[in-house]
Image 1 (cartoon, rainbow, N blue to C red):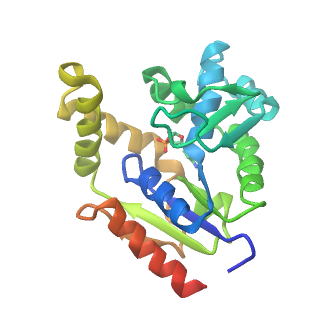
Image 2 (image 1 turned 180 degrees about the vertical axis):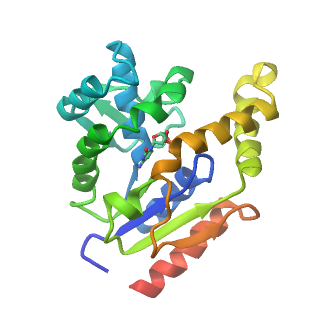
Length: 225
Ligand code: DC
């Protein structure tokens, strides 16, 4: 492995990437980078400035000119990390319904993706990294030391998401069927960038706990060392 090892974890929404990525990074002492959070942070600012998710020029310029920072959690409110946009903490807004609805489209434009690419690579330059997203093994870190692609049936992902929403919203949570339909739509919107790298190790997580997946990946890292 190189001096600053790179582990890429890709997979669809709800595949457990963030839980697994964060635990793995903690065990290895590496930086954890959730690239979805960068696209979400961009979307927060775009919505504030009334830049439409279809506005390629507006979003492209915004992505090129904005400063993004990912830090360890600066507040003890259950967050996995803190994201600063031009120095401002936008972490609480990253998962708002408005961002959830707009981010598949804002993140789909090649000019936006190009602007985010250099930032993601820069984050992986300075230390060992576990980076999670959709295109990390294929585009962002094509030479990563280890590439993992998490796979899980849409119904199981919807079940997990519905469980979280029930805990958060109680009786006002959407139905399981609605969550399942939304998840299938997200998959369709994300499909263009969701492709396992040819050399990715595929792990089906339907019947596995997050910690089991972490242990399995740690074994693979041990074999590479
Ligand atoms: O993983 P997530 O749900 O937080 O991702 C939010 C959005 O960003 C989702 O629509 C897919 C997109 N995304 C992307 O296009 N490329 C990445 N590397 C990570 C996320």
